[in-house]
Image 1 (tube, rainbow, N blue to C red):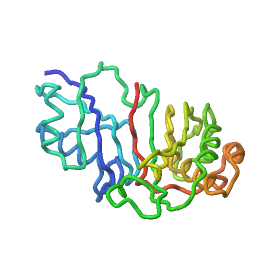
Image 2: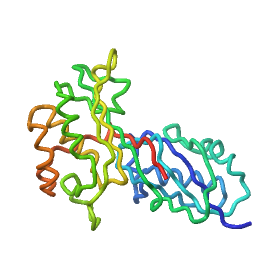
Image 3: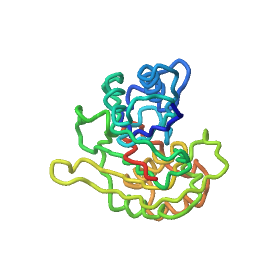
Image 4: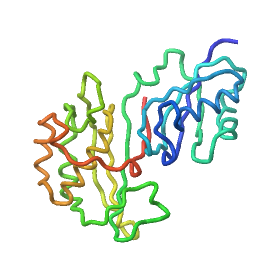
Length: 250
């Protein structure tokens, strides 16, 4: 048998995990998937990930990849892995990409979605998947500020100090803020679509937009914050619970 690449789409509730990436002594999504794949195939397998989500961040469309020698048919992988995974992780599909497929290098865009709940009473059935912030937010002002971020820019102001990557230039295709309607009127959704993201970048963008929506800054300040290339110029770090990696495109 020859070596194969198997690509997966993976969903998970990140609440009880210390992020995606394997770390000694703590439970992570990647380690849990590695254990499941190793148990299935019968030899040590490493599950690579296209995005390193932070502790507490969720995913509907993370992409994973293993390289292995196994006779297991590709279409059998999702059920076989799901039988070995906890209830808060699910493999949605599996495919066999070309051998030259680059899990990270071939990514063209990603979509992250952040949800806030602004009602007075916390939504207990949804609290793991949103930031409960019982304040009035000017979503129109937030959306005007969000539009400033579209384009290719240096996003150093929104990168965590722990991010050591040489280049902080990224392209944001769209950044939009919308309030729900009807029985969802207490929810505010922020979507950020880009070619890549820095460590904590989306959460820092959300925190800054919330500061604008709460009246700390005018929407026009977003341009100055972006231009400053200084994390201290931007707003607060939004909690991880409201953030979800929706999909990754190649």
